[in-house]
Length: 80
Image 1: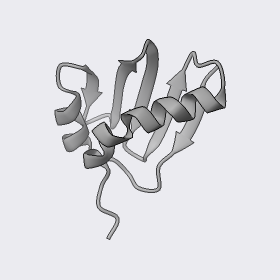
Image 2 (image 1 turned 135 degrees about the vertical axis):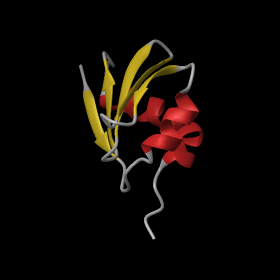
Image 3 (image 1 turned 90 degrees about the horizontal axis):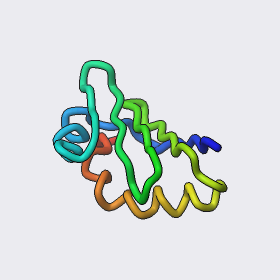
Protein backbone atom coordinates (compact mmCIF):
# COMPACT_ATOMS: atom_id res chain seq x y z
CA UNK A 1 0.00 0.00 0.00
CA UNK A 2 1.17 3.53 -0.74
CA UNK A 3 -0.07 6.36 1.46
CA UNK A 4 0.16 9.88 0.04
CA UNK A 5 0.21 12.99 2.21
CA UNK A 6 0.93 16.68 1.79
CA UNK A 7 2.63 19.24 3.99
CA UNK A 8 1.19 22.75 3.98
CA UNK A 9 4.43 24.20 2.59
CA UNK A 10 6.91 23.14 -0.05
CA UNK A 11 10.37 21.77 0.63
CA UNK A 12 13.57 23.67 0.03
CA UNK A 13 15.27 20.99 -2.05
CA UNK A 14 18.68 22.45 -1.29
CA UNK A 15 18.05 22.05 2.45
CA UNK A 16 16.38 18.66 2.07
CA UNK A 17 19.22 17.27 -0.03
CA UNK A 18 21.72 18.56 2.53
CA UNK A 19 19.81 16.81 5.35
CA UNK A 20 19.62 13.55 3.42
CA UNK A 21 23.22 13.54 2.21
CA UNK A 22 24.51 10.02 2.72
CA UNK A 23 21.11 8.78 3.92
CA UNK A 24 19.17 8.60 0.68
CA UNK A 25 18.89 9.84 -2.86
CA UNK A 26 18.02 13.44 -3.63
CA UNK A 27 17.84 15.60 -6.74
CA UNK A 28 17.47 19.36 -6.44
CA UNK A 29 16.86 19.61 -10.19
CA UNK A 30 14.09 17.01 -10.24
CA UNK A 31 12.63 18.14 -6.92
CA UNK A 32 12.46 14.67 -5.42
CA UNK A 33 14.15 12.79 -2.57
CA UNK A 34 13.92 9.16 -1.51
CA UNK A 35 15.12 7.43 1.63
CA UNK A 36 14.27 4.54 3.94
CA UNK A 37 13.01 4.76 7.51
CA UNK A 38 12.31 1.66 9.60
CA UNK A 39 12.38 -0.41 6.40
CA UNK A 40 9.82 1.72 4.58
CA UNK A 41 10.55 3.74 1.48
CA UNK A 42 9.60 7.41 1.66
CA UNK A 43 9.54 9.79 -1.28
CA UNK A 44 9.44 13.55 -0.71
CA UNK A 45 8.61 16.03 -3.46
CA UNK A 46 9.43 19.73 -3.69
CA UNK A 47 5.70 20.54 -3.61
CA UNK A 48 5.42 19.15 -0.07
CA UNK A 49 3.96 15.81 -1.10
CA UNK A 50 5.17 12.70 0.71
CA UNK A 51 4.60 9.08 -0.34
CA UNK A 52 5.11 6.22 2.13
CA UNK A 53 5.55 2.94 0.24
CA UNK A 54 4.74 -0.61 1.36
CA UNK A 55 3.09 0.51 4.58
CA UNK A 56 0.33 -1.59 6.20
CA UNK A 57 -2.09 1.22 7.00
CA UNK A 58 -2.66 4.95 6.97
CA UNK A 59 -2.11 5.00 10.75
CA UNK A 60 1.31 3.38 10.31
CA UNK A 61 2.20 5.95 7.64
CA UNK A 62 1.18 8.81 9.93
CA UNK A 63 3.38 7.38 12.71
CA UNK A 64 6.34 7.14 10.32
CA UNK A 65 5.83 10.72 9.13
CA UNK A 66 5.59 11.89 12.75
CA UNK A 67 8.88 10.06 13.43
CA UNK A 68 10.76 11.85 10.64
CA UNK A 69 9.12 15.26 11.05
CA UNK A 70 11.71 16.66 13.50
CA UNK A 71 14.46 15.66 11.07
CA UNK A 72 12.92 17.13 7.90
CA UNK A 73 11.16 20.16 9.41
CA UNK A 74 14.21 22.34 8.73
CA UNK A 75 13.78 21.69 5.00
CA UNK A 76 10.22 22.96 4.83
CA UNK A 77 10.26 26.31 3.07
CA UNK A 78 9.24 29.35 5.07
CA UNK A 79 5.64 30.10 4.20
CA UNK A 80 5.75 33.76 5.33
